[in-house]
Length: 323
Ligand code: NDP
Image (cartoon, rainbow, N blue to C red):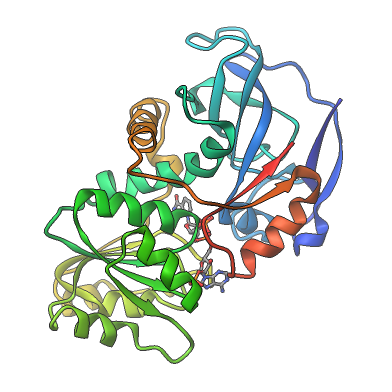
């Protein structure tokens, strides 16, 4: 019997329950993973709240890292005993998960489970944002919101490796120091009254930035648009403060023929593309260009605590659950 964190309805973090789960054998093309570390992501909170639809009851959890305990029919390229990191969609908050083999990647030697769980989904998201959605260049200036958070930490480190100038936006002075250490050369500390776009204009001699990576959503969307240079790229990829507002195409034209995109990792990390994305990500970790920061290690049974911490907006780096 495997234990897992279930939700039976949508709601606040206290609806998470830790209970027995009668996991069937892995199906065709699935692997069974004995989870060692499980990355906690804001996506899990959107699913718990009901912003991102999932069927209920559900086991939460979008990614896991662990050892393959069994393989289903038709699995090739993976064996019992392999160390893997996996995108799961849901079902990762568990001692054991059955996962599509096409959503897994082997973890290279030298990267432990905790690091793999801290970096896999967030680092693949970063690879998507910096190399696929918009190819960030050394001569670009980019705006990164939540620059000390889970994705933000990796995004800043990777953008620094590319050589781009990074303007980081954070919610506190403590996070400002972390974002600077991650590679942001300029920091905007945001509160309810901060005029982010005006600060960006000051920092860029009125030029604006080539790309804005905005995961905060409702509270920052307009400021991000107003921070862009002509022909700039608005990348809205999250809703930490709530979903961004609707926008008319003409508003993009008026601001300088901007582009607007709303990428989702699961459309990029398809079975065809995941292996190369994972190889690139793990190489960045092995080289020391990306150094995931783990702010909290929390037992799986206490996943509710991890959710409360993450949605408080006060954490930095990655939170992982341990089994
Ligand atoms: P983070 O560790 O970045 O935590 C969220 C951060 O958002 C907070 O620390 C806080 O940073 C900021 N924030 C601003 N307003 C709020 C608010 N009202 N409530 C809570 N936090 C707030 O989380 P993750 O690294 O897990 O995820 C970062 C973002 O990336 C999320 O929005 C997530 O949805 C998105 N994402 C999108 C993916 C995609 O495929 N599109 C894939 C993976 C993640 P500060 O105080 O510094 O502003």
